[in-house]
Structures are given as C-alpha cells and as structure tokens.
Amino acid sequence: MRASQFFIATQKEAPSDAELISHQLMVRAGLIKKLGSGLYSWMPLGLRVLRKVEHIVRDEMNKAGALELLMPAVQPKELWEETGRWAVFGPQMLKIQDRHARDFCFGPTHEEVITDIARKEINSYKQLPLNFYQIQTKFRDEIRPRFGVMRAREFLMKDAYSFHTSADCLVNTYQAMHTAYSNIFTRLGLKFRAVKADSGAIGGDGSQEFHVLADSGEDALAYCEQSDYAANVELAEAVASGQRAAASEAMREVDTPKQTACEAVAGLLELPVSRTVKSVALMVDEVFTLALLRGDHQLNEVKFGKLAGVTTFRLATEEEIRAHLNCPPGFIGPVGVSDKVRVIADRTVALMSDFVCGANKPKFHLAGVNFGRDLPEPVVVADIRNVVAGDMSPDGKGQLSLCRGIEVGHIFQLRTKYSEAMQATYLDENGQTQVMEMGCYGIGVSRIVGAAIEQGNDDKGIVFPLSMAPFAVVICPIGLDKSDAVKQAAFTLYTALQQAGVDVLLDDRGERPGVMFAESDLMGIPHRIVIGDRGLAQGEVEYKGRTDAEAQNLQVTECVAFLR
Ligand code: ATP
Ligand code: MG
Ligand code: MG
Ligand code: MG
Image (cartoon, rainbow, N blue to C red):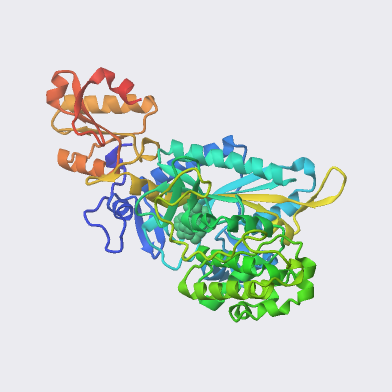
C-alpha cells in the first residue's frame, strides 16, 4: 500500500473520555472513530488490524473442524420467549419493532437462533457432532460503555455452538475449543491465561475464560505457579471455601430454574443481572437446597422476598425434608457478595442450621449427624474479593498469585439448557428421541485489538505483535522528491517486498522524516526501513525494529530476505 493512496488519520490529542491507553492510542492512530456511546467505525487502518485477528480466529476454528455460517443479527422475540430469556436478559438487550409492531431484538448472543436451526435441521445421531460458528456483529446495551472497543455496545464476536449426542462428546469438543483458543491467542502474540470462570447455573468445570493479562483489566485472576490452577477471583474465592464446589457438584442433579432465581435476586437487590448476581443466584440455589427438596422444584414460586425473610423454609415440612434427606447434601454457607447479601446469608445459615439441627440438637434421622463430620460445615466467606496473594490454592499445590485480565474468550458447556427448553432433539441408534448436548464458545474479536494494545504500547504509541499489525513494514524514503536514486530504491524495494508477500506500506507522501517516524511508531508498525542518499551510496538502508533502541544498517540486497 502506498501511503499517498491510503487514509492515514492520526491525531495529536486523545479524546477526554478515553481512560485507557489502548483507547487513547486507537483514536490517536486513527484506527477507530467514535459515532456515539459504545459505537465505533473501524477506519481502513483499524480494519486491517481487525481483519488480521479475524483471519487467525477463523483459521483456527476451521482447523478445529468448526463450520462457519452466518445468522441474522435481528432475532424474533418468540424464540427468546421459548427459553424465557426475553424477560431475563434485561436491559442489555436492544429491543426493536418492525413496521407491523412485531418485537425483535438485535442479537446480544445466538443460542436461541442456533438451537432453532439445530432442532429443524438435525434429526439423527448420524449428523452429530456438529460445531457451527460465525463472526458477527453483536449489540449489548452495556450500562457503562467504555474503554473504546473493549466495552462497546456494538462489537464483533466469534461465537460457536456445538451439538452432541453425549456429555463425553461435548467435553471432547470443549477441549478442542480450549486448544484452538490457546492457539489463537498464541498466534496473536498475546500474553494470556485460561481461568476457571464462574459458570453461573451450571457449576463444576463447565466454563473457562481466556484473559489477556493487563493491569488495567476489569477482572481479577488468581493462579498458582506450582500447578495449572487458575480462576477468575469470583470463583477462586468460592472454591477456596472448598465445600462449595462439592455442593455445586451435588446440586447439578437438582433441576432448578436458576435463571428465575437470578432474576429474583437481582430484582430484590435492585442490581442488573450480571455475573455478580449469578454468584448470588448460586448461593440462593444452595440455600434453597432444602426448600427445593420439597420435590416440586418450583423455585420460581419461591420468591426471594421470602428467602430474605427466611420464611421459605417453613414451606417444607419435617416430613418432606426427611423424605429427601438422602439427596445430596448441597447445603453449605453461602458466599457473600455485598453487605446486604451478607446479612441475608448469615441469617440464612443460622436459620437453616437451627431448622435442620435444632441449634446443634439434631432432629429427624439426622440423629447423631453433625456438621463437619457428616455434612459440610456451614461456611460463610466474607467477601468474594477477599482472596489475597499467598493464600493456599484450592488444589493445595502452592500459593495463589493475583493478576488482572481482560476477558477475550469464554467457553462453556451448556449441556441441555437450551436444547431442552427448545426441544432440540434427535433420534438415537435405537430410534429413541434424545435431547442434544450443547456447548458454546465466544471470542471478543474487536475487544482483542484493544486488549493487545493495552499489552503492547510505549511512549511513542502502539507496539503491535506482527500478527495483527496493520502493516508489517513501512518504507520511509528521505527526500523522495529530490533524489531519483531514493525514489527508485524505495519503489524497487516496495515491489520486491510485495512480491515476497510482505505487508508493506510505502510512505510516499513526501513528509519529513520526523512525521513519518512518529506516525508509523504511533500506528505500531513493527519494522521500519529508511532509505536515504547517504546510505544508498554504500548500498545500504537503515533498519529499525519498533522497539529497538538503535537503528542498524542493512545491505539493500539483503532487505527482502531479512524482512520476509
Ligand atoms: P464481560 O464480562 O466483559 O461483560 P461477557 O462475559 O458478558 O463479557 P460473553 O457473553 O462471555 O461476554 O461473550 C463472549 C466474548 O465477547 C467475551 O469474552 C468478550 O471478549 C466479548 N464481549 C462481551 N461483551 C463485550 C463488549 N461489550 N464489547 C466488546 N466485546 C465484548
Ligand atoms: Mg457482559
Ligand atoms: Mg464475563
Ligand atoms: Mg463471559
């Protein structure tokens, strides 16, 4: 590309709303232009970067056997009503109407649409497993759009959805996606870490996030150098209590409409349905264990208000509890999230202990049973953000270290949550109808660009990894208009690099060296060749890597081999 025919739109000042260095630099380098809150145009320079990320993502997804498709961004309300998420998704969902006053949303995610495809198109076990993906624009009406493209409202996501005949098969694909994601972030040249994520309603090892490591990241991660243990701190703290994991495991069998609990909690605490609230919902599930064991599993009938007043447990009679005491002991102390929840949690534990054991005097056939020995000790974790560096890792293999990360990917074993709600079934070998197992796998394609710049920058501007730089090499000719030798050498090298498949920018605008250098450094171009009369007289040009302290001389003849 010749700079004179390209659109370079760098600017001196960063906008006042740009808190993070990546946001400042993306605007200053002219990668993006703001249209409105959380809405950005990708300018030609920025789009080159985005496309390179997309290319690597697509390539690794294809290699992992996933099949690309493209679903509509606009989705009918009726689909979302089938899973109950029209009501649950909350204000993050942008709802729209067509001319017939029919309701739609601009898709924040695509589980419903893909499940609709699966139930219509997949009939037989012979067609499975399948893993579909798309790279597509999503809209989420984020409460606080910020950090430029990192928390935008309209953004580009790669989302994949897999379908299986068994949980084992799902786990295989989940692991293949884990590998593909590791390959993607390695190829992109990013420092990243995969961590256990709060898997909300599902529990266990069913969900992992991939984080680009950066001090400015919104998430706190805990990891252990001595083992491969790593978790989002929300989960780390919960698991640090040990028993909660066991309880979640046990709870997995209990069929609760968790989304409803989540909503109820959110409503009562006047919180948006967020990850934080998902943790509370888990707590509620655990607290609700006994209540649920009434047998009707109608959590949506048990309003959180009752839980707060702890009248809920009176709904279960001694008889009913006794009838269910063989069920997994999913009763442990809840994880406090805020003071408000904490109070509720403490009271709940106290009340449940009292209710089940009669203040340490066990009732029912619980005679002789005591907490700690027969049932997990009720534990109240003070605050989920309380993990400190040096705490023992839950696997007991070493101490925890803490760091911060930017979530760029999230993989999830959905199991049958959507396929059941939407009746996505197939016929097995015996002609029996079975519900499909599902997984889903997201990558924030546009967020990656911001995250990479958070990791790669200096006082001159962006330091892109080669894999996603808008151009690999910039040629800066000095005195292009005055010297035929410079002009000829510059164009010859430009052509030779192009033929060698190198992504090269020739700065033929006739700008001063200072301007050319400042702009190419700001844009994060990894390699720079300066061509001037003095060097050419020796058959040399000057080379400088973006982060090199000093330039070095190169023979003109070795340039292509050096840069290829
Ligand atoms: P976050 O916790 O940052 O809000 P999320 O957990 O809501 O993200 P997912 O539903 O897991 O996001 O979506 C998959 C990926 O999409 C995320 O891992 C992230 O990289 C990206 N993503 C989510 N929200 C945004 C956003 N507002 N802007 C840009 N990328 C986003
Ligand atoms: Mg989110
Ligand atoms: Mg998240
Ligand atoms: Mg996520």
